[in-house]
Each structure stands twice: as structure tokens, then as C-alpha cells.
Image 1 (cartoon, rainbow, N blue to C red):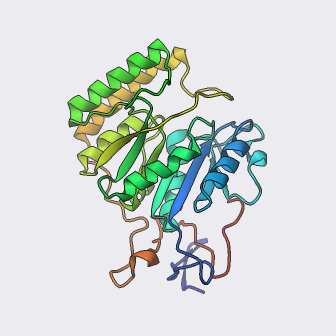
Image 2: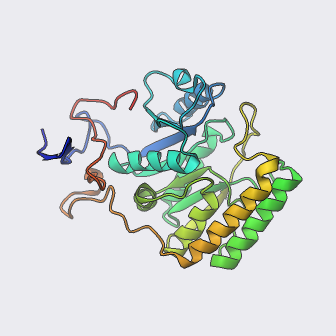
Length: 299
């Protein structure tokens, strides 16, 4: 057992050096983060497709305060973090990235629970990231002709965001609102430290670029949503654009955030595969399971 230090009513458990959960198992490398909110009609199919297509990936579902049977639809042997109330996609994804940082994953991929993101495309994102030319790879619906159709309002909004990001940081993104993205350890650690709220995808692109991270796009095929409903309705489109534009302008003058140390190796003597978590601020943390153990089905 690791040493522990009593802090008020909480006990902060210091991290232990751990390379494998079980003798002979490879270190954890890839994590698929599936954020869901009232996706009971699709989440089981999404998770099962991921596990069939990507047997070497771990999968975690982040339930963002769903009020339907979403959690009950997740296979019982898949970890689920159930948030007590709806935080929005930003809070859900930061939870997933913090989990990835504390458990030492090499790559984390966001796969939405509505079924739009194809598991067959996840491998391409990871392979592109492993080439070492970028820290974040974004799956783009528009980098190449793919037959994906948008409403006129969404198309206009996407064009305005592309123009604004290019003006503010010089980066041209064809699909800056895509949530289909793969992040390496550097980005995982940054996202675990802080992640924008509400609709964070455009903000993340701008902040990472300003902080010196490399961002690239890869053409992917996506399905149209078949179940549930989008979090951005046509009536909210104008408000969304104004809000995101203001946030992007504020991000230009704020200090880029990625200075956190969540998930950073304790010292240089540990090898890359011995990548260990550190306690997060406030003494709260998830501990990886002990040797021979396995992650809990639900957190």
C-alpha cells in the first residue's frame, strides 16, 4: 500500500509506481472517451462497435447527468463516470481527460455517444498522431468531399468560426467544431488541468495554437445523428455564434492555460511506460487499481 496523508476529512493516497495492472499485460496506451447526455438509444451500440473495432483500446463513458436510462444501457464491464448533474460537454470531457491523465494513457480519443463518429476512423486518427507531427488531430468532415451535409445556418456559422480562428491565430481549420479528435499525453495533461465550458472545440483550437501545440486535421467520414437531438438547436444558433466569438476574442488576451502538472511523471528516473499520476489540486484523485486489480465498473 502507498503512504497516505490525512488531510481533514479526506485521505490523500500518494501514487505508487505501477507499470502493469497484471503481470505480463502491456501498459495502457489508448483510451476512447465517450461523453453522453440522454443517449440511451445509441450508447450501447457505440460502445460495442468501439470494442469490436478497437480491441486494444480501453473505453470509458462519461455520463453528463443523463435523466434517461443511458447508464443502464452501457455494458456492465465498461467503466462509467456519472456526473451528479449536467455540466455540458466541456465538463464531461475534462472529466474524461483527467481520468486519462491520472491513469497514464498515451492517447485519448473523443468519440461522441450519438453514433456520428465511426470507430473505423479512430485508428486513422491515432496513427496520424503517432507520426509525431502534431499534438492534437481533429477529424474533419470537410477537408475532403464526404457527402456530409449541413443546414445553411450551421454552414454559415462554421464559415464564420473558421474565418475568426484564422484571423486570431493564423490557423486554418476546415472543421473547428468537430468533437472527433485524438490527443497525445501533452494535450491530455493540459486538458485535465483546464478545459473550456459549453462548446469548447473552437476555443481549444485557438488556445492550443497560442500555447505552441501542433494541431492538424485528417479527413474522416461521419454519420448524421439518428437518435437523440443536437445540443445546438437552430434557434440557439445565433446566440451560440455570438458567445463563441466573444470567448475567442477573450482567449486572445488571456494567458494560455497549459501549465498544469496533472499526470506528469514524478521524476526522470521513471521510464515512459512507468508514467504515473500526481494528486490533483485539493487532494482529490482517482487512484489506479492495485496490482492484479481492475478499474471499477462505475465511478
